[in-house]
Length: 420
Image (cartoon, rainbow, N blue to C red; front, side):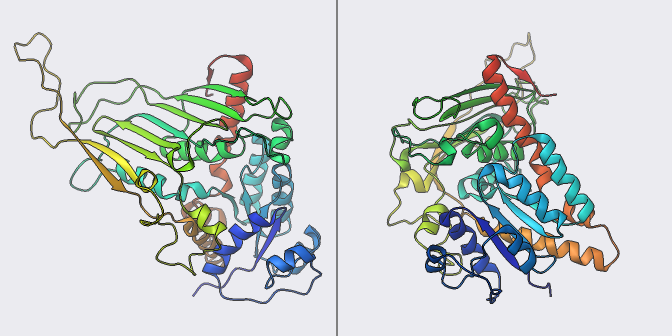
């Protein structure tokens, strides 16, 4: 049986602490905290948790091989993560882990050198709608994927917030302190796109402060177009099989001036050679956490839309698929006397969204730490163990930071930039 993982959270806002604590309590045995002083507000909010006064106290009270969870301001993520690794601890860091590639590489090197996990909190990989898209893009054992070869992918995190709410995200410099929407919500959208499709061939970015509230350099509206190379010849399961089509185009973005109710905000649109999928609204897990739910308190309902309170517009996605046909889907031979090809028929259905699984991120973090411990006991390589088990290791973040920097630079230069 694996041993338990001792945990400490380094937080700035109680709300962030609430989210992480919900999952920690759902996957670990009850424990008592070390002696330390506590602040009145935090101790009132979390009466069963001891509040430590500073980061040094975290390092001195947490047993070695423990896990430090960092959810402070963006500019402190890297120094806290670096110090945690250097002190012999595993660390789970809120995104973005850093705002430049060299700092990310430093953490990657430290993870390899120390054998300690440096994971990034990319919880949106475990959104129910994103898991649904993965299932629709995946080939089945006996039949091709529902969507076929992807040709267009759109992902947005839009809101209607015509008034800036203030706070450090809307005030600090994006380049040095990670302010603005691109570093915030954009980190999730970019991580998802890279997870599905890998790095693009070229990038076109549009980044601006559309509301003109607060510092002009802090963006509240952005869009990125990612262009991918020409696809391989289409498989027999796709219309016009054998032909080559233009490369995938990915459109990512977020704005504060999208005047839809939350349940109607466009979230995903995916087009493929065999079908398409559209989804509105956001994953339910964040709102459930705000209500005080945890995977332990609501094991059947957590991560699932409510048929009573969630409208169909957010609960269901719209799936369009090609009607199955045994006809030859290849292109007619040029110059042949064959009749014009008959266009494929399409069928439309509303489909449920798979349950969201944020808890799987924490389960993977624990499994990664235990894999390292087992490898070390067996005289094996900690780095190799992490590479086999970890889903959200810092090494998977390097391209995301590079892409955000490219989007910002493309916007400044007003031109498309190549991925090199």
